[in-house]
Image: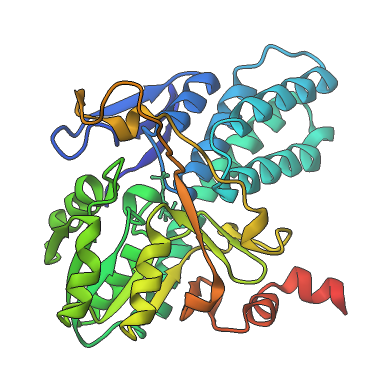
Length: 351
Ligand code: MRU
């Protein structure tokens, strides 16, 4: 399995996703600030991977602290979490991970500084193990929804590289292929950062899964020609009503899928479901550098001074989503009810 990220005694090690597919190189981040930069600069990306990277960054920062008092260590934890929390606003897994590490800190705060440090390192490593297990469970649920044979379109990279291993949308595809289904993947190249062309194709080809890359604007034509039997994508945040924020362009794919009566599935771990955000309207959308749109591989593609929009994500309204696949099971419309049913905490609170 590809090691997207890994805890080492020297720091957090990442496969550098900005260099793929032509170079397979690894980056060691020796401080939490370097981990924050790796998230911001997309050396590591994809919502679940961002979450675990954040947790490891926090563990690293706390481990390296020279604080002698718990209160001073708690202050440092606050600074570390703030710095890491400023990296990317849309993937809710980032904030989920920060909260979980803060809760861990408080649950062991009375046990002394060395124990706190060890507990946080342990927690971050545990999150990596849980993420892979969640993806495998999602794969088992989602594989049942995939066609016995045919084309499956995916957008961006929701694979091993976007998680700690196996992937969410690509985990569903992997599980379907492992179950003997004859799937051919169509990967949208995913302008402007090309996660589909660079990353999805790289990891699927490594696994020997049949894959065709298409430019984003070809998806509708492929659907019309009957080449696509299902769509499966990941998510950066799913609101309580089932609206889904994912890589820019996902919304267009979902609308096209509906027009062609093709099922549109979203696969995501429960850490991506944000029951405290009522609808997609409230999901913050990250704006990235105009240069990602105007330049490619260092070459200028648009005139100097042109106005640029570069939202990294869009929101797909729940009416386009056929089902949401999580490790807890499959949710279908009405999502405000089905997601609540999968969420024991919310169900218990409303009783
Ligand atoms: O900007 P990115 O590459 O971090 O965006 C990634 C996506 O949009 C993925 O589809 C999403 O995070 C799900 S990853 C399992």
